[in-house]
Image 1 (cartoon, one colour):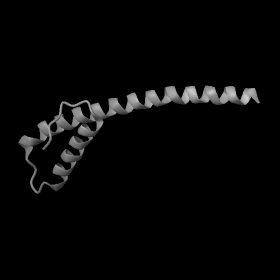
Image 2: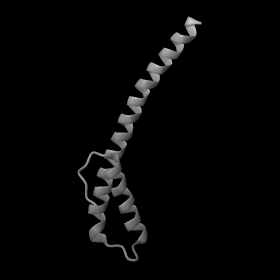
Image 3: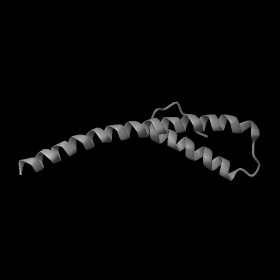
Image 4: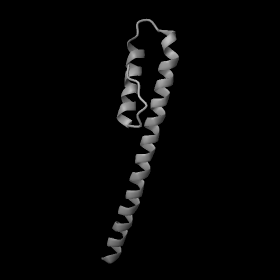
Length: 77
């Protein structure tokens, strides 16, 4: 299973997918593996969440800029 300290969304998303698949396909749960897996998934989730929030904030800035330009163009008519 992948281990990552990466800040990249894709790397952390893959960790989440791998952990979910591993848990889904286990025939017998390995309790000794569970806590480290959940910890790794939790860290990956937090990183994904932070990246998504950063992208959303950046897109909102551009949306405001485009809206201002659009409003200015309408007032020029």
